[in-house]
Image 1 (cartoon, rainbow, N blue to C red):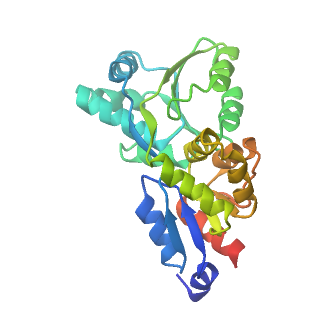
Image 2 (image 1 turned 90 degrees about the vertical axis):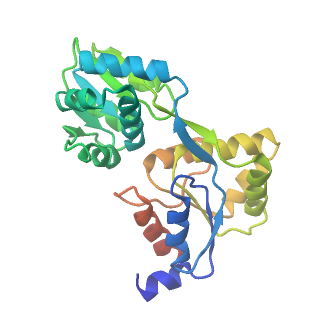
Length: 274
């Protein structure tokens, strides 16, 4: 960290809806002079459909798919946890090594490296559209394509693209997003935005965007949220989050240009704020 970084965030109040790495992200901002407003909106948990995930793992181990699409690193980590508890972790790793793996972005690649593996392909960009373009350049006729989903989102667009390519999708949802903050605390965040008490809000997942709008609209505070976001600098960790914001009518003001992690996001905020 240099003096310029510190000065760029000095005195700013930045809302942090992150949950899993809340303290890490907040400390990155606070080390540069900002005040982090902690309001974790969601948390990640194993899918409650353990039998369904185990059946998918059994199919994968007994007859690996021709391709596997990994949409998130978290998803692979959760699958490994289910596999270990089911006593098929070694069989699952062997099956992964025999499967052509397409990763939506760098995070699934990081998770694969813990197994001594790496993706065979990275998608054109870390979005569903990027994955579809990547699959579109491949011959999938007659193939079975495993798909590790993002949370519980069924991603019908991706499923249909696989079917249109003559393949059979075999999706699995190994984790879910749960509310991680009581509604009054979320409404307090909306009010702080509306009153202009926050300088920046930094979103690190699409589920945070969804949760914030759900609570605000459910409390009749949707207009207040939009007004608050209009007078606040809105940062997104990457294109998936930026797309979610744009769909809600408030495009992000900034995002890292290529590396979609928290450190580049902090640097992007510092560059804009400075």
